[in-house]
Length: 300
Image (cartoon, rainbow, N blue to C red; front, top):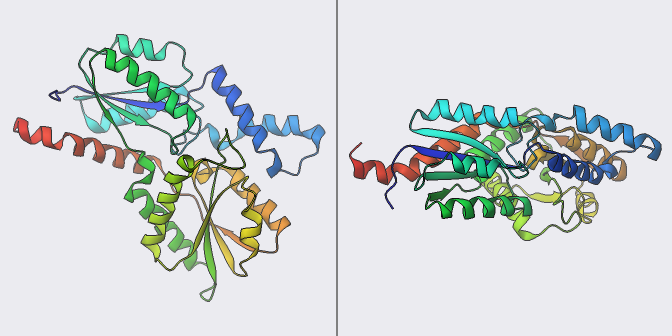
C-alpha cells in the first residue's frame, strides 16, 4: 500500500477518566510503604499525593496522563513542528467513545502512526494497542507503530550527561555505582515480568555504555525484595537515577530516605532529565525516517 499524505499521529495514553482515576488510587496505595505515615493520617496524605503531586504533569515515561488538556497540548505542539501534512491526536485508554469518534473522523486507507506514551509493554498498553489496531484494520488503514521512544540513543545520552555533571560536583575520590530505580509493575509489584523490565534494562545498559563500560550499576523496582540486600553490599556511594515516572517525582526521594533509614549505605540523587523537547525531537526523527523511502520515490 502506498503511503501518501496527509498522515495522522495517534498518541496513546491512559487518560483522565473515572476509571483511570481509580487505577491511580490503586497506584497510590502501592506507594504507601514508602512513607512513615500513621494509619489514621494515611487518607489525608494519599489525598495530598493525588491532588498536589507532580504526576499531574504529562509523564512521557510510563505513567497515567491526568489531563486531557496536557495531552492535547503535546499533540498541538507536534502539529506545529511537523507542518500541515500531519494531523496529531491523543487517544486515552479509558476515554469512552474516543476511539469510535476518532475513527469516524478518519478517512479509510489513511496512514496512521501509533505512538505509545508508555515505557513498558504493560497490560494497559497492550489493551489500548489491540483495540486501536482492530478498529483501524477494519478501515484498511496503513499502520506504522512507533518503537518505545524512551529507549532511544538521545535519551541515554541525556541521562549520561546529567550523571557526569552530578558526579563532577562530588568528591573526586568518590567510589560509586549507579542505582536505577523504577516504578513497580502494578499487576506484579514484588516480582515484575521480564517484558516490563526489558525496556528499562536496555536504557540502563545504553547509559552505562555512554559513561564507561566499567561503571557498575543495579536496576530495581521500588518493591523488589532484593533491593535492600543488594545496596548494603557496597561501601561507596550509590548515584541514584530515577526511571519511569520517577524522573521528576518526589516518590524517588521518599524511597531513598526510606532506604537510608533501613541501611547504612550512602546515596546521592542525580537531578531529573527534562523529557518533553527530547521526546518531540526523537519522535519527529523516527517519523521522518519512516517516510524517507517514500519521499525519495515521490521525488520530493
